[in-house]
Image (cartoon, rainbow over all chains, first blue to last red; front, side, top):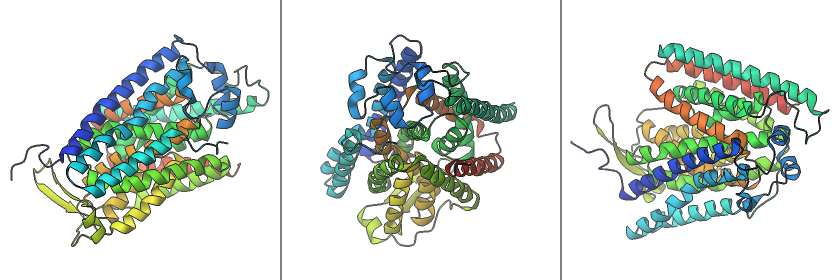
Length: 140
Length: 322
C-alpha cells in the first residue's frame, strides 16, 4: 500500500497543528524578545531585581504583598513594566490551546459529529474558566 | 566526540547542582539577618541566575530527551531541591516548561497522525478540568505537605520508570462500547517500514477514570504527566506505543494549559527565572534529539532514575523539615 505523509490525518487535526505551530513559535519569539527588553533594563520592572532575589525563596503570598504584584489579569495593567511585559508571550503560549479549539468546534459541527463538538465546547469552557482567574485565593 | 559532549553535559549538570545548592545554603543562613528590600541575601549578582538556569535547563533538556521523560518531571524536583526558589514558583515555572515543550512538539505529532485528536480530546477534557482542582489543592496545602507528596510521587515515578514495560503494539481483540462511541481509533504510517497500522482502544472507562488522578497530580505538582499518560494509554487502553507517546505529549499541551493559568493568575510565575528555564530546556531538547543516535539510552535512563530517587528523597526530607 502506498501512502503519502499526511493522507490519513483528519483535516481538522492538520488545521489545529498549523495554528499551534505559528502560535507556539510566535509566543516563544515574543517571550525571548520581551525578556531581553526586561533584563537589559529598557523598561523599569515593577519588582526590582534585588527584591526578586529575596522574594523568590519565600511563599507566593509574600512576593505578592512586598512586590505589590497583582493577581488574576492585573498584570495586563502593568505591561509598561519590564517584568510584566514578559506576560504577553507567556499568555500567548498559555492561550494557544484555547484558540486552537475554536476552529475544531466548527469542523466537528460541519462533520455532524455532535459529541466531539460538545467535548470541544466543554474544553473551551474549562480553559476559559482557568484563564479567567474567577476562582482566586489558596496561595500560601 | 558526541559522547564526550554528553559526559561533559552530565558533569556540568552535577556542578550546577552543587553550585546552586551551595548558594542556597548561604542564602538560607543569611536570610534571617537580611532586609527583604535590600536584596543582599545571595552573594551572586541577579544576572547570574538566568544564566545558570539557562545552562542548567539546557543540560536538563538534553538528558530528558535521552531518558525519554518530560522536562517538568526533572525540573520540579531538581530545581526545588537545589535552587533557592520557593516551591510555588518552581511549580509555576515547571508547568510552563512542560507546556512549552508540549506545544512545540504538538504540530509535528498531529500532522503525522502520531497524536490523535480522537483519543486526546475526551481524555484532555477530564485531565484539564482536574488539573485546575489539583492546582488549587497544591496552592492551598501547606508547603511541607506538598513537598512530602511531591517526594513520594517522584520516587513512585522512578520505580515506575524502572519496572514498567510498555508494549509496542498491544493486542486489542475487541473495542469496548465507550471507545467505539468516542471513535477512539485511527491509522498511522510506521516511517521505518512504511507499514500502515490501524489501532483501536479498549478498557476506555478505566482509562478515563485514571485521568482524573493524573490531572490532579499534574496540577498539584506542576510536573507535566507524560510519565503517567503513556502507561495508561498504552498498557491499559491498548494504544500503540508511538500513538501513546505522541498523544501523551500533545495531551500535556492541554492539561498543563489549565493548571498553568491557575499558577499564572495566582502570581506564581516570576519571569526572571521562568523564561530562561523554558528557553534552556527547549534548546536542550533540540540538541538531545540530535544526540539520540549516539547516546546509550539505557545508561541515561538509569542515571535519571537515580537522580529522581535522590531528588525525591530530598523533597521528602524537606517536607519532614530534616
